[in-house]
Amino acid sequence: MLTWRGTLWGFTMDKVAAEGPVQVPSGGTACVTAEQVGAAAAGAVERSGPHAAWPIGGENLSYREIYGMFADALGVTPDFVPADTSAAHAAAEAQRRRLADAGIETGYDPLDVALWQEQDLFLDPGPAMTALGYPPDDIARAIRDTVDATRKHGGQGPASLTKPT
Image 1 (tube, rainbow, N blue to C red):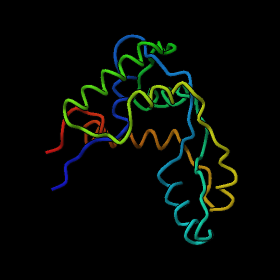
Image 2: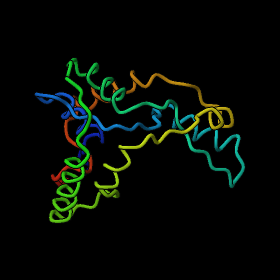
Image 3: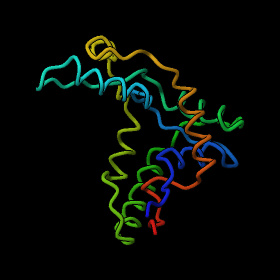
Image 4: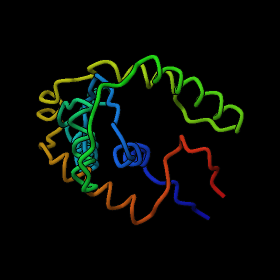
């Protein structure tokens, strides 16, 4: 039996919708929609050699921009403030301990994630888009779809301390 585990973005939705100022990491990341991933995978099969590897992305966004898109999709207007990095690191360490105590493996280290979010982890999507034939897409629309699906199905992602049944 499959159990809904939510999206990886449930935590961000909760954070953006919470009362009070919303701390936002200083970095950014390359974003890609599910449609782009599917088109890139098809393009890799159809256009690429057996040993080709492409970093795929659609658009580079700061976490402030990403959180803003989530806020828009949620219909909230939070007060965004820069994240307190020492508090974020302490919270990541605490999350690491809680997950270990609960016997949950997430496939990532919470402290690594906190450190990554302080950096601009961007890439140039152009070469992969050209080579694999996938187009730009609307990240804000994809985030709205994610918010709608998460609201419909509920739940948090794998970092939740609730084990699936």
